[in-house]
Image (cartoon, rainbow, N blue to C red):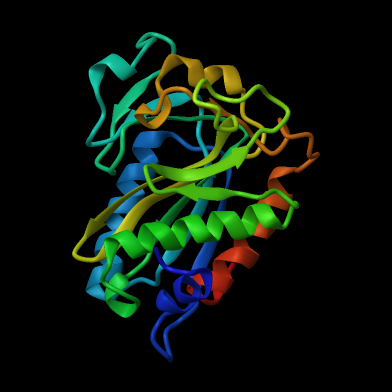
Length: 237
C-alpha cells in the first residue's frame, strides 16, 4: 500500500495543466441525467476539449448496482428506484444528505494505475474527515473509508465495531475516470437497510452527523475541496 505522502504526490497533474473544474450542483439531480452528463464530459476530456471536473451533487433516494452486484444483496427492490451502473463495486445507496462527488480526471496526465487511484480517492476522503477530527481508515479487504466505533460492543471475533462513512465506485474509459465517491454527511441511515451496502455484512453505516458532529453540506464541501487539492492538485470553482 502507498504511504500517504506517496499517494499525495503520485496523482498531481503534469506541470502546466489547467486547474480541475470544481462544480457544486444545487437541488437534487436525477441519476440518469448525472450519468449522461458524466459520459459526455469524460469523452470531452479525452478529446482535449474540456477540463477535468469534480462535480458535487445530491440525488433523490435511490439504489445503484455496480458491475459486481449480487441479486441477493438487494433486500427491498420496491423501496427506491434501482439503477444499473457501469461503475465498479456492488449495491450502494444515494440520497439527500449524502455528498456524491463525481470525479472526472485524466489519469494519462497523472498516473495510469487503477489500484493506486482508488487508494488516492481513499486518502482524499480520509483527509476530508480529518478536518472534522474524525479518523477515517482504509481496509485491505473492504473498499471505502471506515470509522471505528468504540461506543458499541465489539464484533463476535473480538474486533472493534466499525461503520462505513464513505463509499467509492469508479469507472475508467480510455484512462478518464468517472463516477466517484460518496460521503455520508446527514443521510437517512435507515435507507441503507434496503441493500447490503457494497456487499459487506457485519458492519454498520454512519455519517458525520450520526457521529455527533453538526456538519453542514457547505462545511463538507469546503473540506472536500481543501483535501482534494492536497492529493490531486488545484481546483477552481
